[in-house]
Length: 181
Image: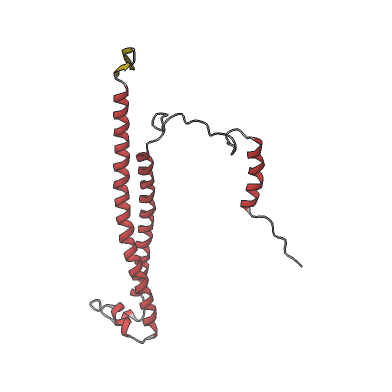
C-alpha cells in the first residue's frame, strides 16, 4: 500500500497567497504596479528610533543569557553534588582533587568522575560567559535606550522653535518663517 503525502505548510500557504496577490488585495502590491511613495523617514512619521529597538533587543539578550547562566550554575552544582556523593571520590580527602585522580585511575567509578568533571567544567565556563554577556547586554541596552530618549527630547525641543530661512532665486528674494508657537 502506498503512503499518501500531503503538501507541506509552505506549499499550502503559497497556494492561498498567490491567487490573492493576483486579485489585488488591498495592502499587497502586484509586480506590475509601482510601490506607493514613502511618507517620509520613520523619525518624521513618528516611528521608532533604531537605538530604541536595538536597546530593547539587548535587554532580551540580557534576559536570555541570565537564564542560561542560572541554568549553568545549577548544572555545576549538580555535578559537584554527584562528585561528592560518589564512591570513588569518597576515597580522597578534601585536599586531594578527585577529578585529577580519576584521570590516571583505571577504577570503574573513575569513568563516571571523568565524565562528571568534564560536564562540570563545560558548564562552569558557560556560566561565566553567560553572566558576562548578561552584564554587557544590560549596559548596552541601557545606553542605547537612554541615548534614544535623549535624542527624542532634543528633537522635540528643536522642533518647537521658530525657523527663519532666507530664500533667493532668479527674480525673487524673501524670507520664510515657520515653526510652532
